[in-house]
Image (tube, rainbow, N blue to C red):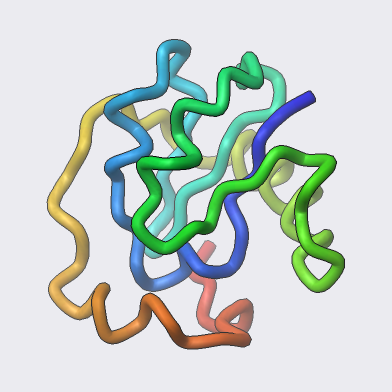
Length: 107
């Protein structure tokens, strides 16, 4: 089983989760993070670190966010690993409660 980053992360990209990951399974895109399902060990330490509640165990991903399971796997193959926390985007707080952001995802 793995964990999945969902839509709430788009345009926020807080990286608090990255610092606590013991296996470096996070991948970084232009405005979104993913979890590599082949690297994730299902430890769950990232979940409480996410300030926008964007990370779920795969079996608990909400119905309207199910597409992010495949999207995480796909993008994790393309994007580089991120292993250290970085400053979040200056406008992250403005985006954290916005819904329906999938069209804003940059690949």
